[in-house]
Image 1: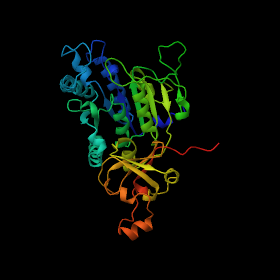
Image 2 (image 1 turned 90 degrees about the vertical axis):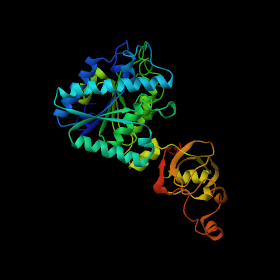
Image 3 (image 1 turned 90 degrees about the horizontal axis):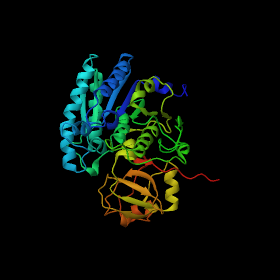
Image 4 (image 1 turned 30 degrees about the horizontal axis):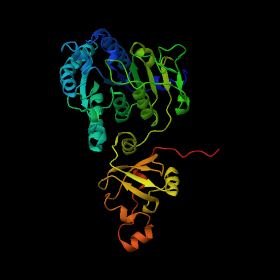
Amino acid sequence: MNILRDEVIQARRVVVKIGSSSLTGPDGHLDLDSLRSLVTVIAQQRSLGQEVVLVTSGAIAAAMGPLGLATRPKDLATAQAAASVGQGLLIARYTQAFATYGLRVGQLLLTTSETLRRDHYRNTQRSLERLIELGVVPIVNENDAVTTDEIRFGDNDRLAALVSHVARADALVLLTDVDGLYTGPPSRTGSVRIPLVRGPQDLTGIEVTSRGSGVGTGGMLTKLESVRIATASGIPVVLTTARQAGPALAGDPVGTYFTPTGKRTSRKRLWLAFAAEPQGRLVLDEGATRAIQGGLASLLPAGVIKVEGEFEAGAPVELVNEKSKVVARGLVAFNSADIPDLLGLTTSTIRRQLGGFDRPLVHRDDLVLLRAPSKKR
C-alpha cells in the first residue's frame, strides 16, 4: 500500500477537495477550526514544495447561520442568494487563515461553461497556471450565485475531478465526512472500509447512496463519478475525512486509495469524454460498432443506421450501438440535417453522387472510446 501511495507523496501538484459537511457545524455556521486545520495541512505541503489547488464547497452552508436558515435552501433563488452571501465570508476566512503562513489566495468561481466550452477550458487552465506561478494558492468553487439546477456539478465532486485535469495535477484528494469507501452504508453493522480500489471490478457488490449530508449535496455516487473521471486519465485519488488530510497527503494508508485505470489524455479527448454535453446521437450497426471499439477507425456513413437530435457540424455527439449503449463520443463533421442522405452509402458512392462529401462523419482523431468491447470467453 505504501509503495502504491508513493504517487501521492511524489505528486508535484495535487488538487484537494473539501465538502460542505467538513467545513460547517450542525447549525450551518462555518467551522473555523476545521477550516484552519485544513489550511495548516496545505501550508505544510507548500513548505515541502508541493503545489496545491483547493476546491472548496461551503458557500451556501456558510450563509445558513447568518441568514437564519435552518436547512439548506431548496428553491433556486434562495440558494443563489445564500451563495452570494456565503462566498464572501468563505474566501475572507481562507484569506485570513493562509495569511498566517505568509500565503496568498486567489479565487476562481466556475460554472460548467468553463469546462463544456473548449475556449473557456483553456482560459481556466491559463488562470490556474499563472496563479501557481505567482505563488498563490488557487481556491476554486462552483459559482453557485449564478448557476441553475440544470448545470450544477454536484457538491463540487465532479468539478474537482475536472479541475485536476485542467490543472494537470498528479493526484486528487477528496475530503468528506466518511473515512473512505465502505462495502455498504458505514453505519450498517458489518460494513467495512475498502482500503484499495484498482478498478471497476473491485466495486462489484458495493452498495452506495446518492445523497450526502443535510448540509452538502453530494453522496458517494458523485464521489465515485469524480474518481472515475480522474483515474481514467491517470490521476490517483484518495478518499478520506478532512481530519485525515495530512496523513493522506503524506501517503499514509488512510481512507480509500483508487489507482489510475487509464493514461493521461489530451484536453480535447478529456473534454469529449467527461465535460462535453452531447447534442445528438448516431446509431451504429454492428460492424461500425466493432470498428469504433477497435480504437483505430473513423466513423463512415455506411456504418450509421440512424441520426437522433439536431446539431451543427463540429458538435459533440454520442455514438451508440443498436441497443442504445454508448460506445464513444466524437465531434461530428456534418449538420444533422445533412446526414440522413448519407446513411448507408459507401465513400465511393458519396464521392460519385454528391461530390466533396467523402470525409468521415467523425474522424478518429475526434473520437473518444467510452465503452470497451466485451471480451469473448
